[in-house]
Image (cartoon, rainbow, N blue to C red; front, side):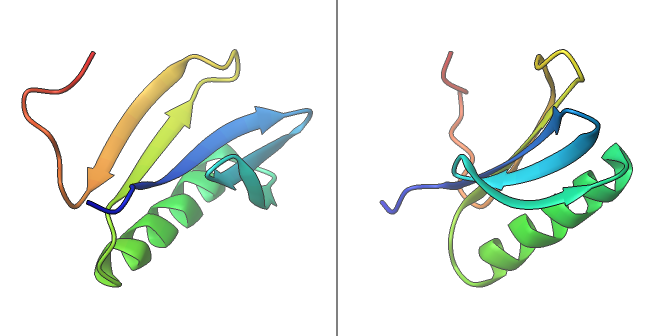
Length: 78
């Protein structure tokens, strides 16, 4: 099975960054704008036939939310 493409929303300095597989993709002034952009990117990847995941982090780096697009293993690992 092809690997899942992971988008992360993280605060770096005074900006919110969207990263694709740990590579910076775009930065935004607000968290909401970054989450909306990352959601659109993950949905587009899924529509193109790939599994995707969106991981949104709090300012302190802890995970706030995770969303999967495509194959979602059940029961979840971990």
